[in-house]
Amino acid sequence: MVFKCQEDSYIKEFCSTVINCEPTNESIIEYGKASKFEGYQIILENTILFPAGGGQPHDIGWLNNTEVVQVIRKGEDAVHFTREPLEVGTNVTQRINWERRFDHMQQHSGQHLLSAILENEQNLVTTSWWLGAYESYIELDSTNVSPMVLENTEKRCNELIREAIPVCVKFCKADDPSLDVAHTRGLPKDCTEIIRTICIKGVDENLCCGTHVSNLSQLQSIKLLGMEAGKKGKTNVRFLVGNRVLGVFQSMLDREKALTGLLKNEPSKHEELVQKLQKNLKITNKNLQNVLSELAQFEVDKIKSTNPTPMYVFINKKEATPEFNRIICKGLEKEGTFVFSCSEETDRPKEGQIIVQGLQIY
Picture (cartoon, rainbow, N blue to C red):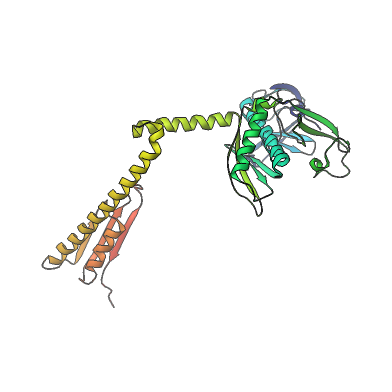
């Protein structure tokens, strides 16, 4: 079955009839993380709420005023998970969370474009992809991916976005001769049902069940964040598309403004000033360690010079370091004195060190 959301990704409201409603305690999954759920699973005659598939997470939204927290596909049906039941036969108005849907559309269409350019122009094949809550990645079937390749690919993708190339949906049979054999891998050989392809004019045609933009201009921009080693023989390339690029840029700008206020310097001097502060902090810490070591030795000498030598010594210095405590214990280990020394971590108030030392009695 082709769902309404797959016919038109831009429908935000749609009316349909409830044909089944059953209680459920299945887990719900949000960007790969499962959580317990008790509620109801509802099947409608048709839906604009996309069930998870093709690497794209599910939509969320409402059936009338009942919140839909997850949608999954079971066979030919889209199953909607709600916390409240709906009566079978009820005609409901579906509404989607458009901000989430459009974000997924941007990331998914961006992935198609990115994978197509890497395959067509760099001979790098995408073997899988992941759409996360904050960033996404594609898995390339190679370890030979250079920073220059990523730089050129990003530039090429953004050129095509500026050209405002149309993106369309096509429906055809699995045995349609117009289908590229390489892009039908994974389909059962006897599959003759209607299948769906996403076409970026002159760039790519690919089987896909997900929701997509209708023009590359709606992606706004693609930003590659870098690469890292994936599974054996694979490379993962992290990326952002559209509003996520703007969101990350805004977060970076906010942090820069905050740093500017703290450092009281212009942004171009932040790195230089932080390096200077780190160097000064290192020198200060070294001087502090020397002072604490001298203080520890002073405490040892003072205790040893006491007449008579005390049987018990309790030392509690908040700023003491493990080295301070070590000097105390080492200096008094032959004096027959019971030593209890404790200190607290300055950056972790609930953590610290306790050392107990005394003569061993046989």
